[in-house]
Every structure is written in C-alpha cells, then in structure tokens.
Length: 143
Image 1 (cartoon, rainbow, N blue to C red):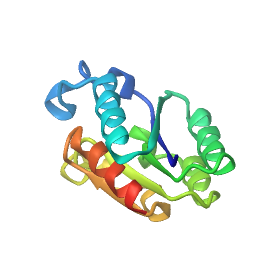
Image 2: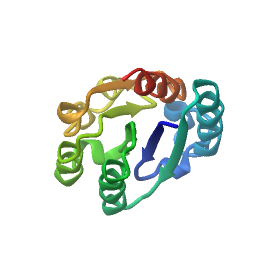
Image 3: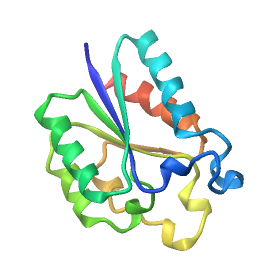
Image 4: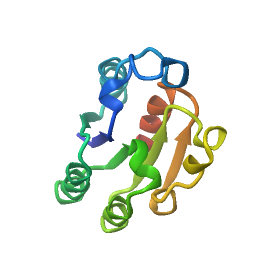
C-alpha cells in the first residue's frame, strides 16, 4: 500500500485555539481524522505527524525517502519563510513534496509572501482551510 507522510511544523499543534479567525476551529486531530478517512477510500496509508522542532521535520523528510514513501504533504508553518535547512531537506530527497497551508500566505503579512520551500516542492495548495490538506492528499495520490 502506498504511504503518504503528512508533516506539520511549529504551532500547528495549537490549531483550534490559535487565531481561529485565521486558521479556523478544527484541531490538527480533526484534520488527521479526515485524512485517515479519505486515505482509506483512496486505498493509501497516511502517517500524520507534528513537531515544533525543525530537526524533526528534516529527519522525517529523510525517513520518507529512505522508507519509500509515495509523497509528502508538508505544512511547515512559520518555517516556510525562514528555514534554509528545511528547503535543503526537501531538495535532497527524490520523494515528491506538496506544500500546504490552511490560510493564503499571499493575503497575509508581507513576511509570509515568500516561501523558501515552494521552489523545491512539486506544488503548493493554500487558502482552503482544512480542505487544503484533503486537496493535497488527493494530489499526492495522483502523482
């Protein structure tokens, strides 16, 4: 069975309580439950993880490649705009990575307008709230 790794970066463990006017009221557990349900219907396996530590995300990207994951869905949170290390980890693996965001970074503060990882990802989906994840999972399966 094909495996899709869904990685979530800093502060995404606070979904549901963190700025609900921006990120909505769904928790990361709510999103993960929807992804598991969708994965079952698509006959793929999803592994949803979250860390507030950049190095964990880098290690998990390497693991995705080493273990033959079909694709990675990555919401790097604030690291999207600051982490050269995360960008390098994405570019260092052959596994396709889809960048995902709940909000639309282009409609937010100017410091969020540049993604350091977008250029090394196969594509980006943002601005659709929790549906950004389900759209990304659908895209990952179609790769």
